[in-house]
Image 1 (cartoon, one colour):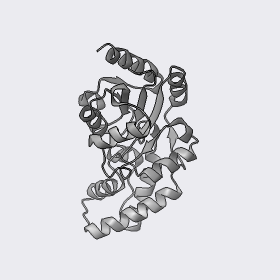
Image 2 (spheres, one colour):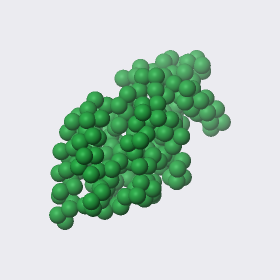
Image 3 (cartoon, one colour):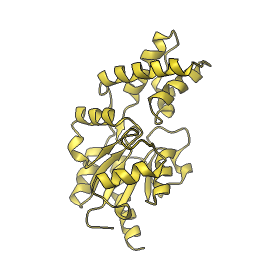
Length: 228
């Protein structure tokens, strides 16, 4: 590893528990269409592929389908509502700040690579007073590709002034593991995020169940890859 290794984080379900506000926006558009509300607990595994996919999954729960134009309309309304309520109940996962502090003390730098829109990602992190923590914050629209396409991760690393050979991905779901594998960097999976498939089954290099475990996991991976 280099003297300034980079840790690249997914956002929803990894850095921040955004489910309450995302599901709130989903329920706003579903209720307006006369459909039942979706409980937060039921919708957690539906998050992670962007607003449009979340809406499609919400419709599927009720056995409903809509035209492309109608889903476009709902997506626009979802994003507008979500923008206004982006940090009503969202909060960083327990132990995150202490983990970042410890890693920063050991020379690690941070970036965000998410399938959330860049503007919404930056707004959320600004509302949580976390923006200054990250050398780059990149979303699905930043480079025109989404995870697991490795371009988004490689370009995020470049924008943060890092190098693929000295970077580690941290995420909660298949796109995070997939993008790391395709980009050729190690990946740590978290068990507290949003995924239908348990993260351990996706075979990241290491799995953690709490942010307090992150510094140790990062240091283990950094040491093992430095020796190769």
